[in-house]
Image (cartoon, rainbow, N blue to C red; front, side, top):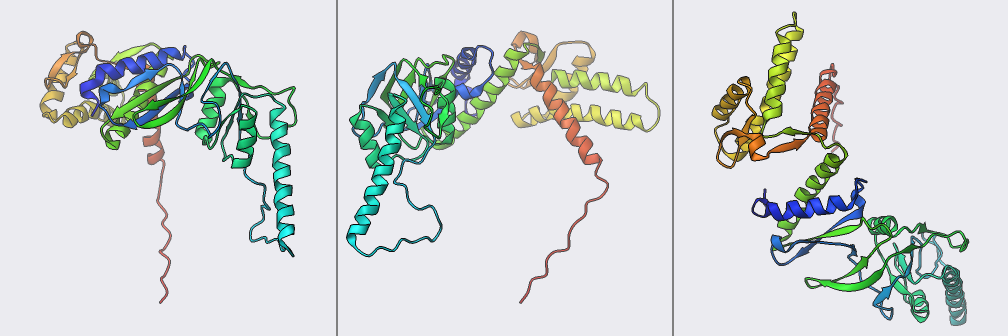
Length: 360
């Protein structure tokens, strides 16, 4: 609802992003980034993948045609991973020996990673100073703490596998892209992956004055992207504005008239449920739902392509207004609602446990 004034702008963003998927329907390739500042119209589509992290200190800030290793492995100093375990030593020399052993073990792990010859090392977990320094000395870009969602998306768009062990350099599959560089969005630094192996990847940068607007824009845009992906898979559409529900209700009522017995009441109840949707549309818009729904029902009986035009609060021609809905989404909503109602009706009795007696 908050996007109403910029609906044309966001409609173009959503359509351009979905068309880049080339019919795959995989929304993992579309990354939405929320940055406070500016206004909604400043939102834009970036043809690349943007990661909300920063490059580690001492590493290159820009790299062209790199080999990218995406990993999920501990790169902190290896410690004893046993709860409440303690190590007793007799002198400071023993402590130094333990630390030296830990550093040596980490150095060997870094050497195994270097055997893969990556130009960029992206890890889901933290990378401590010592291994970070070893990577920087070799001119490797390090990106740490790229959370699970970021690692999964990066592996998908760059074509890399996610590494957790480093024992098979020959059979490894590293990712690639044309360019990695730092850029500024608002007041924050982010990392942009341009020209990914999966060219369908893109990022939608959302700008708004408050977090509330950003959250609302993200929810609305996600709903639109889901509908568009389904529309591309099945391009059939139905007229919106409550037209399809009223038409279905009319057909169901005509069928109910041919059925005898108690089943007729159930079929008529289904028709009444279908007529609730245009009522809800009118109520949400603040109009007199009783008046509008009766007008719509009369127009449907005459065979008109009528529906609710909420811009003026009247019944209008949905085809002329261009108000359509995805057939696939409408079908799934109807099936889900019918199955939920059937499941509730199958419940014979609700069994409740007696509340636990409080002591004291």
